[in-house]
Image (cartoon, rainbow, N blue to C red; front, side, top):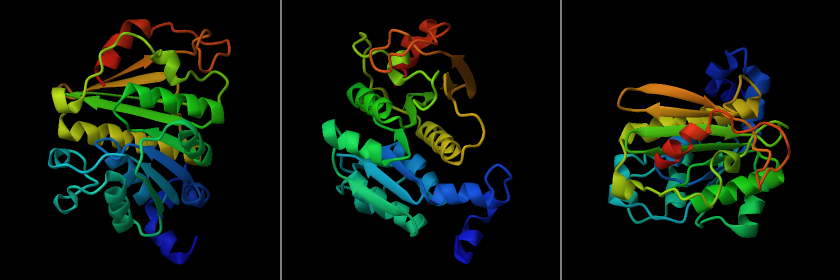
Length: 267
Protein backbone atom coordinates (compact mmCIF):
# COMPACT_ATOMS: atom_id res chain seq x y z
CA UNK A 1 0.00 0.00 0.00
CA UNK A 2 1.12 3.56 -0.68
CA UNK A 3 1.17 6.42 1.85
CA UNK A 4 -2.30 7.61 0.85
CA UNK A 5 -3.76 4.14 1.45
CA UNK A 6 -1.95 3.81 4.77
CA UNK A 7 -3.65 7.04 5.85
CA UNK A 8 -7.08 6.18 4.41
CA UNK A 9 -7.20 2.78 6.10
CA UNK A 10 -5.29 3.72 9.24
CA UNK A 11 -8.17 2.83 11.58
CA UNK A 12 -8.16 -0.70 10.19
CA UNK A 13 -4.39 -0.89 10.53
CA UNK A 14 -4.73 -0.16 14.25
CA UNK A 15 -6.80 -3.31 14.72
CA UNK A 16 -4.59 -6.28 15.61
CA UNK A 17 -7.00 -8.63 13.83
CA UNK A 18 -6.58 -6.73 10.56
CA UNK A 19 -3.35 -4.72 10.46
CA UNK A 20 -1.39 -4.12 7.25
CA UNK A 21 -1.58 -7.75 6.12
CA UNK A 22 -5.35 -7.91 6.54
CA UNK A 23 -5.89 -4.58 4.80
CA UNK A 24 -3.77 -5.75 1.88
CA UNK A 25 -6.09 -8.74 1.58
CA UNK A 26 -9.06 -6.38 1.51
CA UNK A 27 -7.45 -4.17 -1.14
CA UNK A 28 -6.68 -7.24 -3.23
CA UNK A 29 -10.15 -8.79 -2.87
CA UNK A 30 -13.06 -9.04 -5.30
CA UNK A 31 -16.62 -8.97 -3.93
CA UNK A 32 -19.73 -9.79 -5.95
CA UNK A 33 -22.84 -7.96 -4.67
CA UNK A 34 -26.05 -9.31 -6.16
CA UNK A 35 -28.72 -6.65 -5.79
CA UNK A 36 -28.20 -2.89 -5.47
CA UNK A 37 -31.30 -2.17 -3.40
CA UNK A 38 -31.99 -1.91 0.31
CA UNK A 39 -29.40 -4.49 1.40
CA UNK A 40 -26.92 -4.06 -1.42
CA UNK A 41 -26.69 -0.30 -0.84
CA UNK A 42 -25.13 -0.33 2.67
CA UNK A 43 -23.24 -3.54 1.97
CA UNK A 44 -21.55 -2.13 -1.13
CA UNK A 45 -20.88 1.25 0.48
CA UNK A 46 -19.07 -0.34 3.43
CA UNK A 47 -17.11 -2.70 1.20
CA UNK A 48 -15.96 0.26 -0.89
CA UNK A 49 -15.15 2.48 2.07
CA UNK A 50 -13.18 -0.40 3.65
CA UNK A 51 -11.10 -0.63 0.49
CA UNK A 52 -12.22 -3.83 -1.26
CA UNK A 53 -10.26 -3.46 -4.48
CA UNK A 54 -12.86 -4.74 -6.90
CA UNK A 55 -16.63 -4.80 -6.52
CA UNK A 56 -19.04 -6.25 -9.06
CA UNK A 57 -22.54 -4.83 -8.59
CA UNK A 58 -25.32 -6.73 -10.37
CA UNK A 59 -28.91 -5.50 -10.69
CA UNK A 60 -31.36 -5.32 -13.59
CA UNK A 61 -33.72 -2.74 -12.06
CA UNK A 62 -33.93 1.06 -12.38
CA UNK A 63 -34.01 3.59 -9.55
CA UNK A 64 -37.54 4.57 -8.53
CA UNK A 65 -38.76 7.26 -6.16
CA UNK A 66 -40.07 4.61 -3.76
CA UNK A 67 -36.54 3.18 -3.45
CA UNK A 68 -35.05 6.31 -1.91
CA UNK A 69 -36.60 5.66 1.53
CA UNK A 70 -33.98 2.95 2.16
CA UNK A 71 -31.71 2.39 -0.88
CA UNK A 72 -28.95 4.78 0.07
CA UNK A 73 -26.75 4.15 -2.98
CA UNK A 74 -29.19 6.20 -5.06
CA UNK A 75 -30.30 9.84 -5.20
CA UNK A 76 -33.23 11.89 -6.44
CA UNK A 77 -31.13 12.98 -9.44
CA UNK A 78 -30.54 9.38 -10.51
CA UNK A 79 -34.20 8.30 -10.64
CA UNK A 80 -34.67 6.30 -13.84
CA UNK A 81 -31.01 5.30 -14.02
CA UNK A 82 -30.15 1.61 -13.74
CA UNK A 83 -29.31 0.74 -10.15
CA UNK A 84 -26.00 -0.94 -10.98
CA UNK A 85 -24.86 2.19 -12.82
CA UNK A 86 -26.13 4.52 -10.09
CA UNK A 87 -24.38 2.35 -7.51
CA UNK A 88 -21.11 2.50 -9.41
CA UNK A 89 -21.31 6.30 -9.30
CA UNK A 90 -21.94 6.29 -5.54
CA UNK A 91 -19.09 3.89 -4.80
CA UNK A 92 -16.71 5.90 -6.95
CA UNK A 93 -17.53 9.01 -4.94
CA UNK A 94 -16.86 7.33 -1.60
CA UNK A 95 -13.63 5.63 -2.72
CA UNK A 96 -12.23 6.34 -6.20
CA UNK A 97 -9.53 3.69 -5.70
CA UNK A 98 -12.08 0.88 -5.93
CA UNK A 99 -12.72 -0.70 -9.32
CA UNK A 100 -16.50 -1.10 -9.70
CA UNK A 101 -18.08 -3.20 -12.43
CA UNK A 102 -21.77 -2.55 -13.05
CA UNK A 103 -23.71 -5.51 -14.43
CA UNK A 104 -27.12 -4.35 -15.63
CA UNK A 105 -28.67 -7.80 -15.63
CA UNK A 106 -30.31 -10.41 -13.46
CA UNK A 107 -27.48 -12.90 -13.24
CA UNK A 108 -28.38 -16.46 -14.21
CA UNK A 109 -26.90 -19.51 -15.88
CA UNK A 110 -23.37 -19.28 -17.23
CA UNK A 111 -23.14 -15.53 -16.52
CA UNK A 112 -23.90 -16.15 -12.85
CA UNK A 113 -21.41 -18.99 -12.66
CA UNK A 114 -18.68 -16.88 -14.24
CA UNK A 115 -19.34 -13.93 -11.90
CA UNK A 116 -19.27 -16.16 -8.82
CA UNK A 117 -16.13 -17.98 -9.96
CA UNK A 118 -14.30 -14.66 -10.40
CA UNK A 119 -15.17 -13.37 -6.91
CA UNK A 120 -13.57 -14.02 -3.52
CA UNK A 121 -16.84 -13.54 -1.64
CA UNK A 122 -20.48 -13.26 -2.73
CA UNK A 123 -23.15 -11.15 -1.04
CA UNK A 124 -26.74 -12.17 -1.75
CA UNK A 125 -28.72 -8.94 -1.45
CA UNK A 126 -31.51 -9.91 -3.85
CA UNK A 127 -35.25 -10.16 -3.20
CA UNK A 128 -36.42 -13.45 -4.73
CA UNK A 129 -36.05 -17.16 -4.02
CA UNK A 130 -35.13 -18.21 -7.55
CA UNK A 131 -32.03 -16.01 -7.58
CA UNK A 132 -31.09 -16.96 -4.01
CA UNK A 133 -31.09 -20.65 -4.86
CA UNK A 134 -29.24 -20.10 -8.14
CA UNK A 135 -26.57 -18.08 -6.34
CA UNK A 136 -26.26 -20.79 -3.68
CA UNK A 137 -25.77 -23.51 -6.31
CA UNK A 138 -23.08 -21.45 -8.04
CA UNK A 139 -21.28 -20.76 -4.75
CA UNK A 140 -21.30 -24.45 -3.82
CA UNK A 141 -20.05 -25.41 -7.30
CA UNK A 142 -17.20 -22.88 -7.23
CA UNK A 143 -16.51 -23.15 -3.48
CA UNK A 144 -17.09 -19.46 -2.80
CA UNK A 145 -18.31 -18.12 0.57
CA UNK A 146 -21.82 -16.65 0.48
CA UNK A 147 -23.22 -14.00 2.82
CA UNK A 148 -27.02 -14.00 2.64
CA UNK A 149 -29.29 -11.33 4.10
CA UNK A 150 -32.99 -10.49 4.02
CA UNK A 151 -35.27 -7.79 5.45
CA UNK A 152 -39.04 -7.28 5.37
CA UNK A 153 -41.36 -5.24 7.61
CA UNK A 154 -39.38 -5.03 10.91
CA UNK A 155 -37.73 -8.46 10.57
CA UNK A 156 -34.23 -9.20 9.33
CA UNK A 157 -32.07 -12.28 8.98
CA UNK A 158 -28.54 -13.18 8.01
CA UNK A 159 -26.36 -16.25 7.62
CA UNK A 160 -23.02 -17.20 6.07
CA UNK A 161 -22.48 -20.30 3.95
CA UNK A 162 -18.87 -21.33 3.28
CA UNK A 163 -18.41 -24.43 1.09
CA UNK A 164 -14.67 -24.30 1.76
CA UNK A 165 -15.50 -25.67 5.21
CA UNK A 166 -16.32 -29.39 5.15
CA UNK A 167 -19.09 -29.09 7.75
CA UNK A 168 -20.69 -25.89 6.42
CA UNK A 169 -24.33 -26.14 5.36
CA UNK A 170 -25.53 -24.34 2.25
CA UNK A 171 -28.58 -22.14 1.72
CA UNK A 172 -30.56 -25.13 0.41
CA UNK A 173 -29.88 -27.03 3.66
CA UNK A 174 -31.65 -24.25 5.55
CA UNK A 175 -34.35 -23.32 3.03
CA UNK A 176 -34.91 -26.24 0.64
CA UNK A 177 -35.97 -25.16 -2.82
CA UNK A 178 -39.53 -26.05 -3.72
CA UNK A 179 -40.99 -25.71 -0.23
CA UNK A 180 -44.42 -24.11 -0.27
CA UNK A 181 -43.42 -20.79 1.32
CA UNK A 182 -45.06 -17.56 0.26
CA UNK A 183 -42.68 -14.97 -1.16
CA UNK A 184 -43.27 -11.53 0.33
CA UNK A 185 -41.95 -8.26 -1.07
CA UNK A 186 -41.36 -4.75 0.20
CA UNK A 187 -43.78 -3.34 -2.37
CA UNK A 188 -46.62 -5.22 -0.71
CA UNK A 189 -45.55 -5.65 2.93
CA UNK A 190 -43.36 -2.59 3.51
CA UNK A 191 -39.96 -2.42 5.17
CA UNK A 192 -38.52 -0.28 7.98
CA UNK A 193 -35.81 1.83 6.33
CA UNK A 194 -32.98 1.42 8.90
CA UNK A 195 -33.52 -2.35 9.02
CA UNK A 196 -32.01 -2.73 5.55
CA UNK A 197 -29.05 -0.68 6.73
CA UNK A 198 -28.49 -2.90 9.76
CA UNK A 199 -28.65 -6.15 7.81
CA UNK A 200 -26.71 -4.85 4.80
CA UNK A 201 -23.94 -3.43 6.99
CA UNK A 202 -23.77 -6.74 8.86
CA UNK A 203 -23.39 -8.53 5.52
CA UNK A 204 -20.44 -6.27 4.73
CA UNK A 205 -18.92 -7.01 8.14
CA UNK A 206 -19.18 -10.76 7.58
CA UNK A 207 -17.73 -10.45 4.08
CA UNK A 208 -14.74 -8.43 5.35
CA UNK A 209 -14.11 -10.98 8.11
CA UNK A 210 -14.08 -13.73 5.49
CA UNK A 211 -11.64 -11.77 3.31
CA UNK A 212 -9.28 -10.99 6.20
CA UNK A 213 -9.70 -14.35 7.92
CA UNK A 214 -10.46 -12.86 11.32
CA UNK A 215 -13.15 -13.63 13.88
CA UNK A 216 -15.79 -16.30 13.46
CA UNK A 217 -18.28 -15.87 10.61
CA UNK A 218 -21.93 -16.77 11.09
CA UNK A 219 -21.56 -20.19 9.48
CA UNK A 220 -24.16 -22.65 10.74
CA UNK A 221 -26.05 -19.86 12.46
CA UNK A 222 -29.19 -18.04 11.35
CA UNK A 223 -29.28 -14.57 12.91
CA UNK A 224 -32.81 -13.20 13.31
CA UNK A 225 -33.44 -9.54 14.16
CA UNK A 226 -36.72 -8.22 15.53
CA UNK A 227 -36.44 -4.54 14.71
CA UNK A 228 -39.37 -3.55 16.93
CA UNK A 229 -37.81 -4.92 20.10
CA UNK A 230 -34.25 -4.60 18.72
CA UNK A 231 -33.42 -8.13 19.81
CA UNK A 232 -31.29 -10.67 17.99
CA UNK A 233 -31.78 -14.44 18.08
CA UNK A 234 -29.17 -16.92 16.88
CA UNK A 235 -30.38 -20.32 15.67
CA UNK A 236 -27.76 -23.00 15.08
CA UNK A 237 -28.21 -25.45 12.23
CA UNK A 238 -26.07 -28.04 10.48
CA UNK A 239 -25.54 -29.53 7.08
CA UNK A 240 -28.41 -31.58 5.71
CA UNK A 241 -26.96 -34.98 4.75
CA UNK A 242 -29.71 -35.30 2.14
CA UNK A 243 -29.21 -31.85 0.63
CA UNK A 244 -29.63 -31.89 -3.14
CA UNK A 245 -27.03 -29.13 -3.59
CA UNK A 246 -24.09 -29.70 -1.21
CA UNK A 247 -24.93 -33.35 -0.60
CA UNK A 248 -22.05 -34.56 1.58
CA UNK A 249 -22.82 -36.36 4.84
CA UNK A 250 -22.54 -34.55 8.13
CA UNK A 251 -24.44 -31.98 10.09
CA UNK A 252 -28.19 -32.31 10.21
CA UNK A 253 -31.15 -30.05 10.77
CA UNK A 254 -31.38 -30.22 14.56
CA UNK A 255 -32.82 -27.07 16.02
CA UNK A 256 -33.74 -25.34 12.78
CA UNK A 257 -36.98 -26.96 11.63
CA UNK A 258 -38.97 -25.05 14.23
CA UNK A 259 -37.70 -21.76 12.83
CA UNK A 260 -37.51 -22.40 9.10
CA UNK A 261 -40.94 -21.22 8.03
CA UNK A 262 -40.94 -18.22 10.37
CA UNK A 263 -37.57 -17.14 9.05
CA UNK A 264 -38.44 -17.59 5.39
CA UNK A 265 -41.68 -15.68 5.88
CA UNK A 266 -39.58 -12.67 6.92
CA UNK A 267 -38.02 -12.31 3.47
